[in-house]
Image 1 (spheres, rainbow, N blue to C red):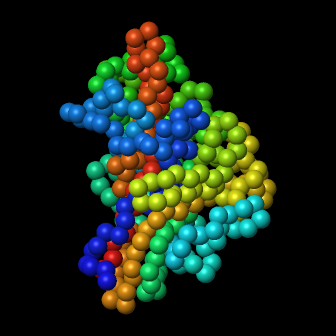
Image 2 (cartoon, rainbow, N blue to C red):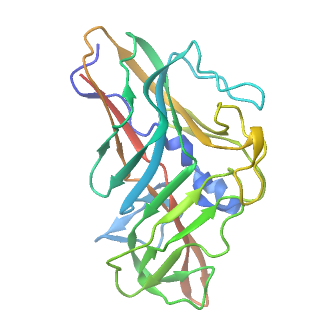
Image 3 (cartoon, helix red, strand yellow):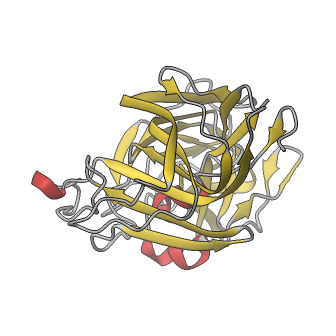
Length: 301
């Protein structure tokens, strides 16, 4: 039986962005083991590998959230993601609902249709969202850094996002990041377009093992079939064009007849991925700040 306001699970969408958002295949081997950045006194410490931190703002678009009585079958280029018969939609928004999360607070999901799931035992959660993410923020570091891809740029202990768009295949040659000695009052928005789970080729599916089980992600068409026409710097065209991203993760839940309300909220304590760069002539660098996995919580009453 579900107790009042019981938190069923956090981090449903962690499988969505675990490696793809990093923008570099050379980093994907360590992406699946990324954890929250070690911070002391409000600054990100020098010894951090790839890690998650909190941006100032985080924006994504949600089309559907569901609970499943078993893991959905994976999509192929001819067969859609296997939701029918095992999954029920708890939130639907055919045109997409933009979720904008501000640092330090969670945001409830509104603007679509919320449907109570039938009383049953569920094992997985599924979320269908846009493959486009927007983040912004300013970040403090223990030591001075400068952008790795622009070694003539200014350096400092403060780095921030600048306005720009980048596909993940291939990553931008100049990441939208700047550094200096003082934090910026106004920062730019990075639009990260996930058209592949690899920087060097079209890769439409991703899987990682976590403590709670297997998390999977797929880049799919509008009818939830696996993408097939992505090219460098593009979501593709025609029937194989990618328009959605799907995340599937373990989400055990027991819904009973006494369940009365349900609330879905998003937070972004891991909404930004810090990727350190190499050290050049004694100068630490930063490869970039990219979108990271939002966390979703589901509470029922």
